[in-house]
Length: 296
Length: 296
Figure 1 (cartoon, chains in turn cyan, blue):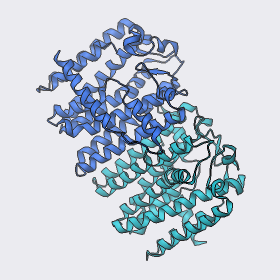
Figure 2 (cartoon, rainbow over the protein chains, first blue to last red):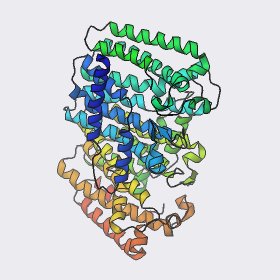
Figure 3 (cartoon, rainbow over the protein chains, first blue to last red):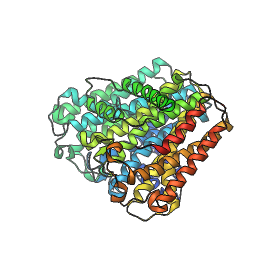
Figure 4 (cartoon, chains in turn purple, yellow):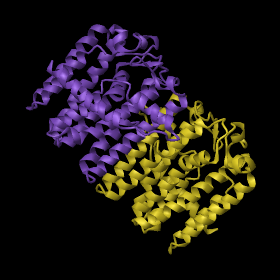
C-alpha cells in the first residue's frame, strides 16, 4: 500500500537522523549518553516527527528544513516517557517490549536522562535558529513546541492524570488529560511544521482543528487497545489501565460509544484535510484512517 | 557595608520578579504550580540571576534587559536542586532549612515540577527573544545557557557525581564534577549577561576566566562549610558529604590545602576584574571576597 510505504519511508528518515546524535564515546558522563540513546532508539511510531516533517511539506517546505526540529520533538516525547515510567510515576518495567530506562540504568540516571533529553531538544532547536540565520520562523516554531510541552501543556496533562489515579473522574477531567497529555505535542508537531513550511494564519488554524481531532482519536484508540489489543503486538500488558484503576474513554463512555466517537473524530479530521488541494494532504487523510485502525 | 547593600538590593529585585510568575489560580493542574512556586521561592542566595544582571550592567546594559533571563536561570538552578534531592538521587529531606519538594508534595509531582521549571525557563527565554524583536543577542544568550545546562554541561557533572558516590575518586574526576555540576551555570550566567550587555569576544573570554575561578572557589568553600559550618546558619546538616562517603576538595587535598587554594583562586578572580575600568567591576571583586568568606 502506498500510504504504508510512505509512512515507512519517513520513519526511516527520522530513525536515521536519530542515530546520528548522541554518538560521543569515552566521555566521563558516558552512561548518560548511552541511557539517552537507549530510549531514543528503542522504537516507537515516530508519529510526532513524521507529522512535523509532513506538515512542513504540505506548505511547500522540504525535509531538510524540518528534520532537526522533528528530532527535537521526538526527544521531548521520549523524555516524557522515561519520566512517566519511573517507579514514583507509572512504575512500568516494559515499554514497546523492552525494559524501561530505569530498569536498565539506575533510577537516578533515568531521571537525568529525561532531563537531558528535554534540555538537548532545546539545544538542537536553538542550533537550528542560529543555522537559519536567526530566522523568525524557527523561533516561532520553537515557541509553539515549548508552550505545548510545559505545565500549561503536556506536563499539565500528566499532573492531572497522576492526581486522578485511583479516582472516579468525570468526562471533563478525562478530556483535559487527553487534550493536554497527548494532543498537545501532536498539535505542536503539526503547527511547528506548518510554520517552517510557510503556512499562513488561516491555514494554521485549520491544521489546529485537524490536530485536535486526530489527537482525540489517537487517545480513544489507545484506551480501546488497552482492552482488546494483542499483548505481543502492543509490546506491553493488556488491561494495565484497569489494573491501575485508571479512568479511560472506554470506562467512562463504554466500548460502543468509544468506537463510534473514534469514527466520528476520524471523519471530522478527514473532512478538514479534504479542503487542502495538495498531493500531500492525502497523507494526512490516510493517517487519520491509520490511527483509527492501528493495532499497536 | 556597601557591597552587602548592593547584594541585598539585587537579591530583592530577583525575588520580586520571581514572585510575579506562577501566579495562576484554580487550574486543574494547580498542584504543579504550587510545587514549582514552593521551591522557586524557598530562599537561596540568588547568585546566578544576580551575576547575570550585574554582568549585563558591567557592559552598559540595564536591569530590565536582563531580568527575565536571570529568572529563567534561577529556574534551571531550582529544577536541578529538586531533582538532586529526590530519593533516587541524594535523598535529602531538607534544603535551606525547609522540607524538600518531594517531602511536601508527592515524589511524582516533584519530578514533574522539576521538568516544568526547566521547560518554563525556555518558555520565558523564547518570550524574551520575541519581545526583543528576535534579537540575535537573546538567542546567543539562550544558547550559552542551554549548552551549559545539558549533558555536556551541568547534567554531565551530576552524572559523574552520582556514579562516583561511595568511591575513591582522583583529583581529575573531582575537578570535572566541580567544573560541570557547579561552575557551568555560574559561567553561563556571567556570559549570558555579558552578551546582553554588549560585551565583545575578548571581554567575554576574560569574564570566562573570572567565572572559572569563582566557580572553583564557590565549590571549595561549600566543601569546607560541610565540615566547619554552622548547621543553623547553613540550613542543612553538617558532615553530609562524609556521611555519604563523598569525595570532596577537603577529603582529597586536606583542609590546609583547600583553604590556601580557595584563597589563590579568589586572588586570581580579583586580579582579572581589576583590569576592567568600571564602577561595576568593584562588585565582582567584592563578590569574589564574599564567596570566600560566606558562612552559608
